Length: 138
View 1 (cartoon, rainbow, N blue to C red):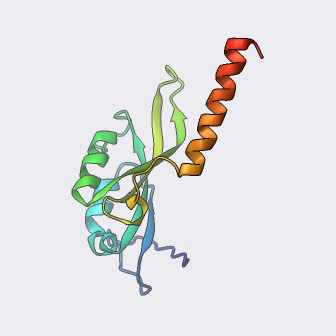
View 2 (cartoon, one colour):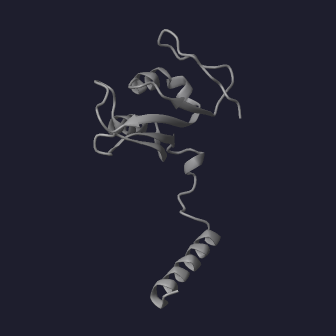
View 3 (cartoon, one colour):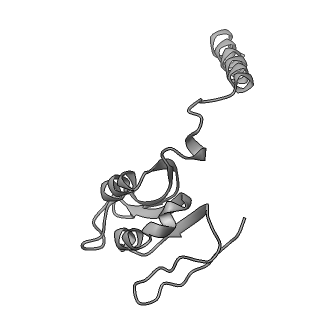
């Protein structure tokens, strides 16, 4: 894996010399859509994008979760994972989170299976044990 740190200057995101696939992390406090729009060449070689998204309009004019998910779908990416939950103190509602987007037709979505057959068997054994414990009392 090659780690590339790129500083954005004068609103331009240059295409780095090494070739993809890339993992792109964008944390730009409300300018996500502008950065993504300017990174089209890089996104063509990108397998995963990590974005901080907000569920409230805390920054005037900044995109919210639904804006980001919709735009990423247009670019051929879908949500793969969510982490880093940030709750607002006002009412403890989820305010921000990091979302991992992957190519809809990419390597991370080659399989839509939930588990391997062995993992399924382990789940069934665990569920049966829990059921016995609850119905028999231990």
